Image (tube, rainbow, N blue to C red; front, side, top):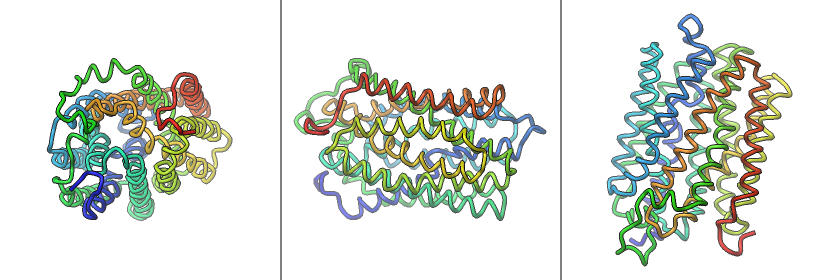
Amino acid sequence: MPAHTPSARARHALDALNFTLADVRDGLGPYLAIYLIAVRGPQEGWNEATAGLVMTLAGIAGLVAQTPAGALIDRTRGKRGLLLAATLVITLCCVTLPWVSNFWVVAATQSLAQIAGAVFAPALAAITLGIVGARHFTRHIGRNEGFNHAGNAFSAALAAGLAYVFGPLVVFWLMAALAAASLMAIWRLPADEIDDDLARGMAAEQHDKAPVSAWQALLSNRKLMLLAVLAALFHLANAAMLTSVGQQLTHIVGKSSATSLIALCIVAAQCVMVPVAIAVGRCADRIGRKPIFLLAFAILALRGGLYTLSPNPWYLVAVQCLDGVGAGIYGALMPVVIADLTHGSGRFNVSQGAIATAQGLGAALSATLAGFIIVGVGYEAAFLALAAVAVMGGLLYAWRMPETGPAHAG
C-alpha cells in the first residue's frame, strides 16, 4: 500500500499508540520530584537540590543516548520492536522506585529509563513519515501530538483522582497499566505499511543512493545546528517550570494535595495542547514555521513571569495552562522543521536524535539550575531566571533562523 494512503488500521494504531504512550514515554516526569521530596523527604536525605541532581543525571544519560537512538532508527527495520523494548524498560525502572531509596540506585534506574525513552520521539515520527509520506507529514504530526496530549490529560486526571484517595504511590500502578495498553497498540501497528526509506527522510528519487553520514548530516547543516541551540534554550527554560511548581505546592498544601494539584496542572496544560497541536499541524504549511515558533518562546517567557505574582495554588494551576500553548507548539512543530532541514538526506531520524540531545541537555541543566536557585534564593528568582532564558531563545530565533516552510508561507 502506498505510504501516502495508510489503512484505517494503521491510522487507528498510530492514534492509540500516541495516546497510550503519553504517560510512559517520559517516565515519572514531574511526579519523580514530588515523590522524592514528599514521600522520601529530608529524613532520607532528599530535598529540592538532591532531587534536581537525580533528574540532571538521568537527563544527561538520556541526552547521550538521543543521537545513537536516532541513528539506530535510521538503520533498523524493526521499529516496532524498539518501541516494545523501550516501553518495558521504562516501566520496570519506574515501578521499582518505591522499593529503593539509595541515591545512586534511584539515579541509575531513572537514567536507564531516560536512555530507553530516547527511542520514542524519533521512532514515532519515523513511523508516521514512513506511513503517510512527506506531503501529509505536517498534518499527521499535529494529529499525533493531539492524541499524545489527550493521553497525558487522561492519565493525569486519573492520577489526580486516584492520588487523592490512595496517595501518591498510585502513579506507579497507573503507569504500569498504560504500558500494557501501549504494548497492545504496538502489536496492532502494521509493519508492512512502514516505508523504511521514507521513514528516514530519503527522497523518492534518491532511494538508490547511499545516504550521507550521520556526522555529515549534522555538522554540515548550519541551520540544523542553530535549531539544536534553540531547542536547548527552550528546554532550559521550560523543563524545570512544572517540577518547580510541584515542589512549591508540596510546601504550600502538603504531599497528598500537591500530587493531585500537579496532576491537575498537567491535565489543564494537556487539554490546551490538544487543539493547539492540531491547529499547528493544519496551519504550519500555510503561514510558516517561524511566526508560530516565536509565539511558543513568547508564551514560555510570559508563563515564567506570571508564576511569580502569587503563590495561590489555583492561580498556579491557571498559569500552567499556558504550557499547553508553548509546549504544544514546540511538540507539533519541531519534527516538521527538522524534516524541512533534512529532506532528501536520509538522516531525518539521526537529526531528530541530535536535536533531542540538545533539548535533553537543556532540560537536564534546567532541573539543577532551578533547584539551586530555589534553595539559595527562592522560587520567584528561579521562575524569573527561566523566563529570561526563554526571552534569549526567542530573540535568537527571530534574528538568525529563517523560515523553513513552503516558499509562500507567511
